[in-house]
Length: 235
Image 1 (cartoon, rainbow, N blue to C red):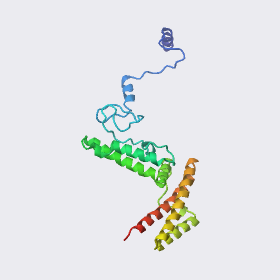
Image 2 (image 1 turned 180 degrees about the vertical axis):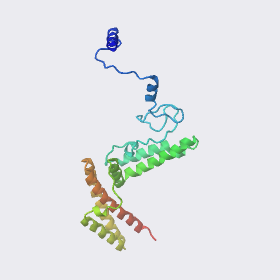
Image 3 (image 1 turned 90 degrees about the vertical axis):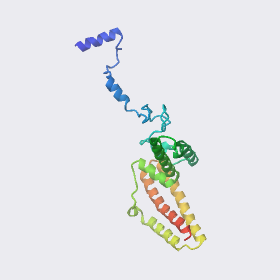
Image 4 (image 1 turned 180 degrees about the horizontal axis):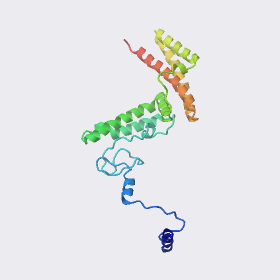
């Protein structure tokens, strides 16, 4: 009853508008605790939010911060989370970031910033390499959707595909001339192009099971590509 009277008086005095739900005010400690959840600079203690475009330096003291563990490669490299990537834009972003965080630019800074610089540079390199190649990009995108491909997948592949892989491997083992090597390279390149187009369509349709199957096949042909490179190296 007393609470109802107080509420009525507050509305009369203009401190409590009618229709506005009553909410408990945060105490000073609670308000302080709510604000403490935002990231703080390790150097000056100033706030710097992960929502800022500049996620590398403190806006107050400009000290390099630790890498953001919540940021994926697509966000880091300023790309849409999609299989289709503008590789020219990706390369430009890579060069931009390395000019920003490369260890060479932190030789005169604190040891903490030197360590962060090493971590940032490694992360940028890994992100660039992963998103540049269609196979690694697809596997990473699949992982972001909670799916991974085990190392040994022979039992999941159809017999016809495995026979095709065996035949190409046999041709490669028997290839002695440059013409024979080029023929095999041409076959593998055409297959990878076909798979890349197909997996792109699968991701666009959110058909992750289909994307997983195609990426598995791409991995087989990627292994053949590595064998071709090794065979080209003169003994």
